[in-house]
View 1 (cartoon, rainbow, N blue to C red):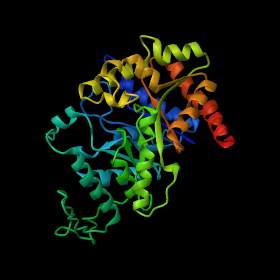
View 2 (view 1 turned 180 degrees about the vertical axis):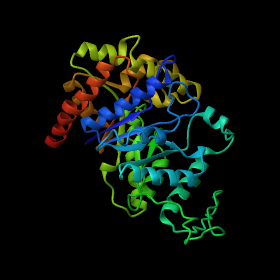
View 3 (view 1 turned 180 degrees about the horizontal axis):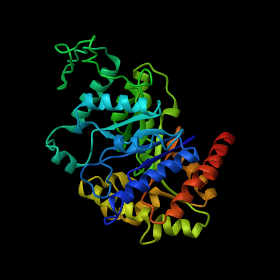
View 4 (view 1 turned 30 degrees about the horizontal axis):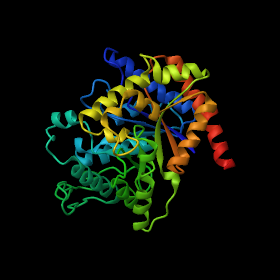
Length: 366
């Protein structure tokens, strides 16, 4: 099992933006040094807590400061810009990063982002579907393209302006062939979108705020999509994100990971819970469909979704998680605000150096 990193870390209001951006960069540099496989970075335009506005731009600052880690948008919100821009910018990034690039994609979920762009009343899932078709078609096609796909609002061509002698009218292609890995975040139980991912050979990343039993519903749908396309299936393609804190002292782990008033984990899930309650999606946190809303408290969510303890305790919990979800290829560690930088760094070190070797040893023995 690989170890990955994901960050959309919900920084508290009042921290200087320059400071939080620097902290988020430092976390990825540390992940690279510790041997994490990849780092996914989220983006929002209008969220003061989740304040990376463009994941590709942020990741570009890390290319020269990292050596091995794959740099992944987590995600590029495809309803926010023309798909040709995404295809061209992602292709250039792939060359800049010498092939260490993963394109993570989603429609873009934050309503205030949609409103400020004038697309609040648009079907953003449909925009997403049309955009990803154009992005992959641009990478697969040669100029002048003449892309006019049925039911797709984005017609793409350079037919009237192309001049190959002058080198104009030609869109760039990625370094990786036939294209970079494309990953989609899965945020709903029994998601039908995972079927489409399997059909297209896009790889699923199950969100860290889903209960394990709902995460387990993703893999059968992915297999269904793969089989319908006649393609081989590998659990190596499936990533599962979890919110994890590891400490040398079990009391510190419990305090910083769940109980303390200044715990970044408590702060993170307090905000996530409030957002999900507002948009009517408390079902993500329910252990069964009929569970009353008033039972979905912050302490309930922290108990169900935060994996915390010593390296030995955390390894045991991850092995237990795998027994619920089934096998998966990558555990994605969710990065949060560094309330205590020493504890935050130490958690990542323990995760890479002690937890994952123990987990993989247990998997090998099984």
